[in-house]
Every structure is written in structure tokens, then in C-alpha cells.
Amino acid sequence: QVQLVESGGGLVQAGGSLRLSCAASGRTFSSDAMGWFRQAPGKEREFVAAISWSSDRIYYADSVKGRFTISRDNAKNTMYLQMNSLTPEDTAIYYCARGSTKYISGSPDLYEYWGQGTQVTVSS
Image 1 (cartoon, rainbow, N blue to C red):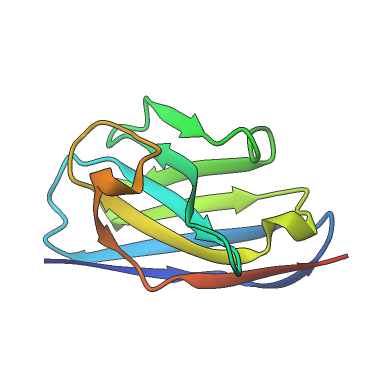
Image 2 (cartoon, helix red, strand yellow; image 1 turned 180 degrees about the horizontal axis):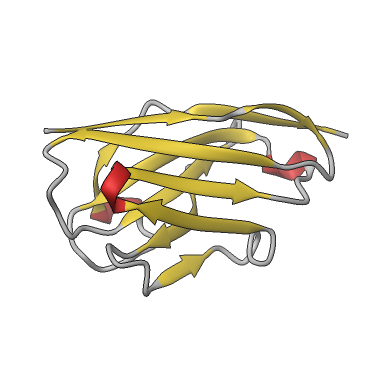
């Protein structure tokens, strides 16, 4: 089993920044990809960013490209999401997830383990 715990969410004004962290524990020896997803009220969960084990492959949703940066530190079993130039449209619960394969993907169906989420609220 793998446990994922997100942190770093909060309330920020438009134009501000936040850095989310996702700490993994349990069966962490793996070469699986990891990703961030988000879900706004009344909307479906949507893909944000994904990263391969070695960080050589990274994929962003168009809506966050150029503003968000995904990274991971395998020695610390932690993944990060640096979010800059935040807008009210970024308000959502952000979830980290570990993929079931080494291939990065925007499909939530290819992610096996999920965290409980952290709330990000951007005020205008």
C-alpha cells in the first residue's frame, strides 16, 4: 500500500503563488509516474501535471502551462507543485496521485493511489 498526503494549500490572492507538496509513504519503491489533479465545485476532476520517475518527462495541462511547475525528490519520497500567477479559476481541491505505470498520463484511470486532497482558494 501507498499513502499520499498533500499539504501547502490555502487562501491566496489572484497573482499570488503557492507550493503544494505530496509526501508518499508505505510501498514507495517504484518507478511509477506521479501526477497532480484538481477538482473544482460542480466540476469533474481534471488533470494538472504529471512527472516521470526520473523527471525526464513532464506533461502539463494547457490551462497551467507556463504558470505551474511539477517536480519530485525521490530521496524524500515527495512531489511538488509550484503554482504561480494564480487566478480564481485555479480554485479547487488539489490531489496528488501515483500512477500504475512508469508512463506519464493525463488520465485519472491510470493512477492507482490518491491523496485526500488540499484546498486551494484564489480570491479576486
